[in-house]
Image (tube, rainbow, N blue to C red):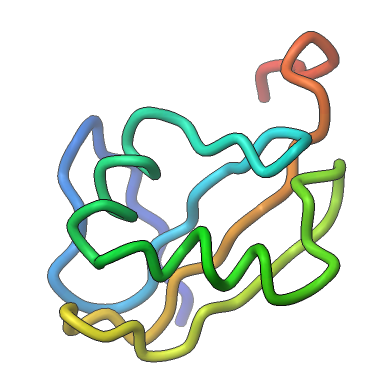
Length: 86
């Protein structure tokens, strides 16, 4: 069964983490901090392919080093001005 938990600032110690990425590969505050902690793995993964943060794009980083996460899922949200709350 799929379990989804919403948290304010905590990064899970295992499982999966979903981060939103705006157009032009713009990471938010949490994503930028995590990328720095992981030695730039998120930015390198985005740069290695066609993922640019366009609305609807998805990029999966499997078993990122320096974590016990099974994956980090990047979800493109497009231009921030076009984002609507859910």
